[in-house]
Length: 439
Image 1: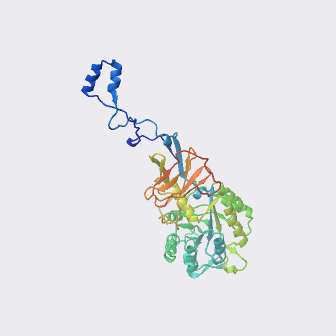
Image 2: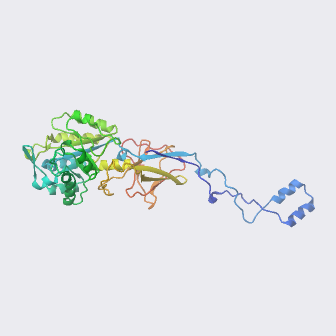
Image 3: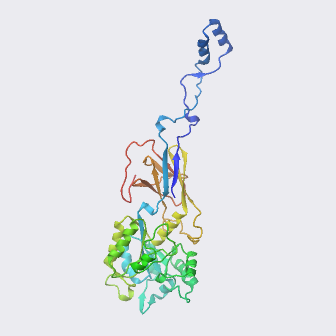
């Protein structure tokens, strides 16, 4: 997805022409020729005197090949692409909570808000009406619609876990109701909800279920509850090799050694996506019937979140990351040079992945639902921009550096950007290590 554009020396225009001071050439009049003949001057001297005289108005001489000295510099090369992960991070991570048990709202949400992290909560709308989920021989208490609305208002994502947590591999499952109607109910009963993701119950699906899901959602989460199975079905998701119909996730379960998910996070930092599937969160106070399946302790959740924050990972809800991946796959970078020292950058849809990445409606182009694509730009001379502006409005755009790359969050309005480069590199470029910085 790299685009290379070689900047050539600018062409000169009439405004760049060079004037010869007080001298120009024009045809001599007949009296002048007769006078020179009368003086009997040598032929060469006469020719020179005939050639030039001081004019009333100077005229431009032919344009030189080189631009003026203050703009003169060798041709350079600009490279740009869409960053694999937002903010130019090394990897991504998403925290997901299944089933909508009451401990999510009472225990998990306050911890997430304290640590300033947004997560995804996969809910079962038909069971929320009842307030109880008969999970085998255990009846688990679920959050209410009021609780679900507050999750949204706090910046978390709500996804579908089907209508009733049905095993979709059985013949009794009503796929239309479980997959399509569950989304409609969630969006109809939660103000401002945009439900674009699904978590497969029991991590199971059929080909028919997959086909309906990919007509209804942007992405679906698969995975496994034990490390061995997780590795067998692909391990850590990679940005370009994952199908969006069953993105692999690691189940974080009570009693499991922390080294398991710590290793998983380290692998994600090498370029992957750590999708963590959690269920119950136990603080020692919530009654057993309000706890989700196989709960972890509060301190384990806190340790997990802090470990993610210590790594070079973009932490965002499952649907936000999936949406970024889908748009990145469908986007190409185009560069042009409308003027000297100026690069025009535009993102355009490539038309690829027309059906494989599903025709379901995308997230609305509003900051609360989707995030801008991060564009990486590199100048061969290691220049840093003088300014970056929207082409139409002239509005300034913030940028930052990360190693050798210049990072720009491309506006959701899809306006082209104009990048103005310096005349020359007057001082060493400032390189800021780490995920953020300012120019």
